[in-house]
Image (cartoon, rainbow, N blue to C red; front, side, top):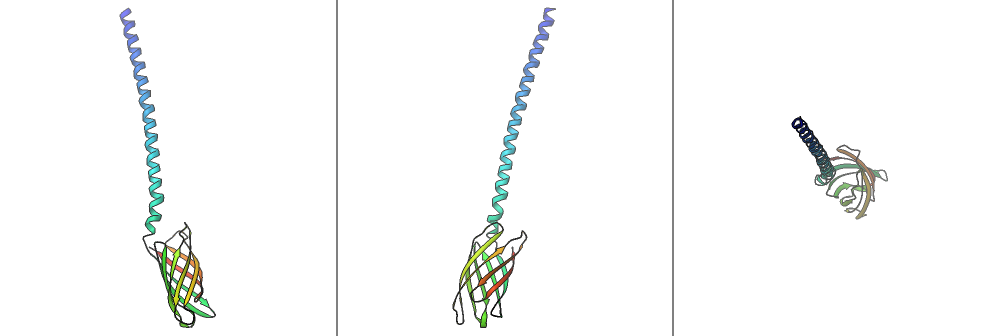
Length: 158
């Protein structure tokens, strides 16, 4: 009888040991899974939040512009790449030339300033404006140019 009670006691202690061991494994696997999930989601968030804007800076953006100054219609076209741009156009009394632009890239808006050289009476030109990105590949903008006047822009991002 004592042997049977001793055997039952050993079985009970082994059962207790295995249950404790199982709890330990479950607790550690939960902690390890939580760490894994945290590192995976952090890495994914970092990759998706930084790669897209940096990659988009290497792709050019093109636009066309139409404006008016002193009842003369002006036309132009531009290209932006890596935070800088070039815009060529024609303005009042047939003055033609080009501008070099610099942009401040913000998430939904990109203001710019520029300096250019044109033919005609006014040789040095200055400009400023803004490009608005509503979330698609097409963007709109507006600005002022000292020779070509107030203008609107419509462009495409690659």
